[in-house]
Length: 147
Image (cartoon, rainbow, N blue to C red; front, side, top):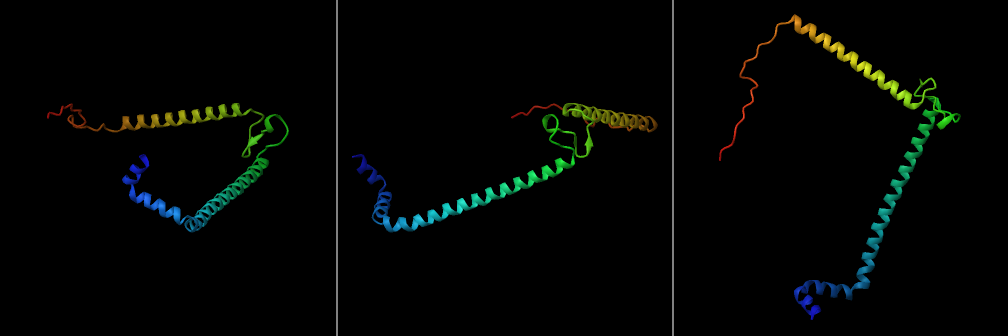
């Protein structure tokens, strides 16, 4: 009873399924080749993408090795023997000490630039006249919407 009700509710779908079942050998042969071609194209694109990623990875590894050999890396010592970075000599410091020193230098430079801007603003404000602004400008007005 359920199958007959399905056929009565969906006559076009059932007719399409019947035609496909009768013509399946010829129909699926063509469709099968099309699907196989799409799958082959997809696999080819994946293969080319994988090959290009491997090529870029090898190039980056070679560049890193060339940069590292010129920057003071060597195989002796602890943790690969990091002796410098980019031509900058660390003087035997660990990486944590180097980072702390660089942060301290950055903080000092920031304080100096703030001190310079503060001293410049105080001298310029004391030597110039102060600008007068209307009292009504910039006031906040609180209001309510009435419906």
